[in-house]
Image (cartoon, rainbow, N blue to C red; front, side, top):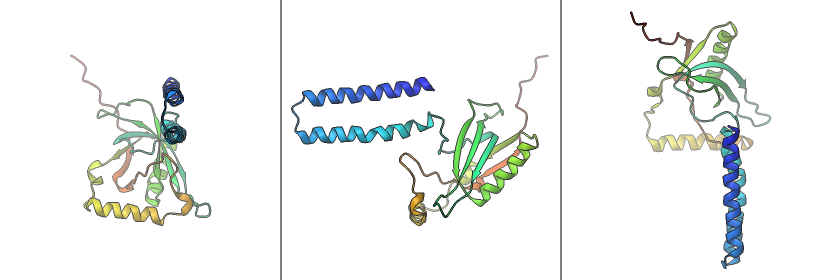
Length: 196
C-alpha cells in the first residue's frame, strides 16, 4: 500500500516537473502559463483526497453484497455542530462459499435510525461471541421511480441539509437504504467433499 502511494506521488511530481520545464521553455502567452500553473496547483489537494482510500480512510462507496461484520462505530447526528452522522463498519467481504476475500476494509454509511438499530443489534451479538454475516439484497435497490424523479429527490435532500454538512472535496454521496441490509449468524464456509 505504501509503495502504491509513493508511486502515485512520484508520478504526479514527474508530471508537475515536466509541465514546469515546458512552461519555462515555451513561447506561450503568459495567460496560458498562469492558467496551467494554477490548474496544476489546484489538482494537488484533489489528488491527495483521491488517494484517501489507499491511505486507509473508510470507503464511502457501496458495501459488499455478502460480508462478515467485524465491528462498527455509530456517530449520531449533532444538529448544534451541523454534523449529519455516520455509521462506520469494518467488514470482511465473503465469496459465494462464505470464504473471506481480500483484507478487511472500513466503510462509512450515512446515519439513519433504522441502520443504527440494525448495527447495534449486530454489535451486541458480536460482543456475545457470535460471528455475524451481513447481506445486501441488490434486487431491492432498484427504484420504481424515474431517474429524473430520483435526481430531484436527491437534489432536494442536499438542499435541505445543514449549511456546514456539505461534503468536502472528494467526498461522494452514497444513498443507502437500510431495508436492503440483513444480518444473521455466519454459516460455516462450504468445503469440498472428501474423496472416498
